[in-house]
Length: 81
Image 1 (cartoon, rainbow, N blue to C red):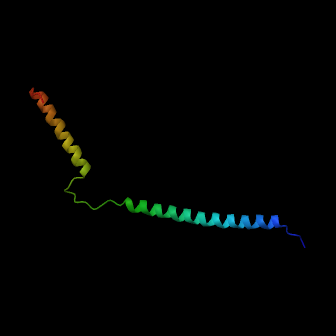
Image 2: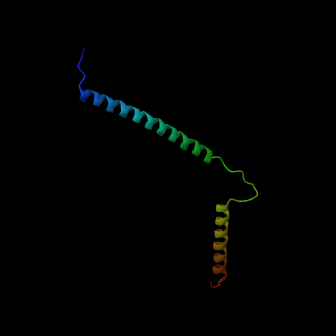
């Protein structure tokens, strides 16, 4: 029968504890990654929007284009803004 030293016992306990902690951390990481994947998948669904109402970004772009057109027309007419 082999003689087990206290150093070997402490090392075995430490290694076992490290293994358990690593496995728990890995499981938590995988669950967290899965949660983030589900959040991203849920976030990509296009919101239901009335096709008659333009998107807020396009309304801002349209307003900007109208303002530029107004300024160009004023320049063409010789009006100083």
